[in-house]
Length: 409
Ligand code: 5CA
Ligand code: ZN
Image (cartoon, rainbow, N blue to C red; front, side, top):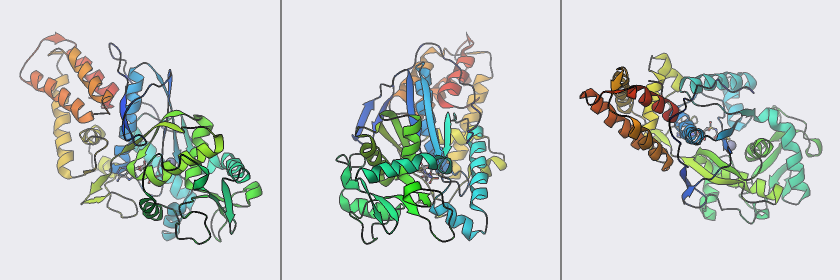
């Protein structure tokens, strides 16, 4: 699949700082030390509804990871998937009497437009589950042949007991895993499984559902976790730097993905850091397509809200916190954007060298975007009071905000 166009990232004076980030697997901060090419996999959308603020907040967090790395003069190898075949997508298409491929294509196009408007840097490889199927089938065959997977009425399940590291991403107890598995696409109640938590790798064709050639597995479609593993191993290999997604993916998705990869390769770790963004809520509940309590990026854009203000709203919240979308948080961002734009519209202003370093330091410290915004606020306040005559300082501020925060002033 094609991704979306990249906005320019201006080069900044001096050198960026290495990123220290919270890793779910170790439960603490980790200073990442990627090679000259940093490798990141971020789980993409299931395209059955438009991009909402929760998605946007999660992709904003990983866009910042990229920007910090680019500022250290590294290249970034970024891979993202699109879960363009899965139960919720097929159910929605059925409910609305539309073709599931058309639904997926339409919502993926809208996602690309939203990402472009928000100035999120695109992945180099943007891969759909459907196009990954020829790579998924041999992996499932390998897991089965190695005894890490088994058949149950034609479906193939992964055996979590085949991975000694299972549990090492989320560190949840068995009961919590069972509850989350039932909530998030698993089937812990199905009789005949070796372990209730075992996730499906390959689902034998069901009446009326799309199917693909699974060679020795028979016709069917892939499970969810193996989809991301196949794409990540194909494009990044083992031991990549960051596996990213929202906190609702830590278990089971990232836990199972890591286990699949360990069982396939005999290597550990799958990712060096598992990084999770907090959940955005609306009216007190997690924004989710299944509940329908959503604020869409595209709807706000249609109402004439500047995408830069949407982005500033996301940046005003620390990526790891759970927060609530309200009109008030958007209004604040609209005001801030206007203040910043006025401040950089003059040819001179207060010195900006320390500002570049403050924004760098804030982001390097577990992506503390709110602290970065406060630093720019301070500079803008000085400017408002007529606090300086450094020629070109507003340009430096503008480039810093663009390069490190993705906001064009
Ligand atoms: N296709 C899978 C990942 S392989 C999936 O989870 N798709 S999704 O469309 O449901 O979510 C896409 C991303 O947005 C995931 O990282 C998910 O964790 C994140 N996300 C979903 N809802 C929210 C929310 N309310 N707040 C923050 N992030 C969210
Ligand atoms: Zn995924």
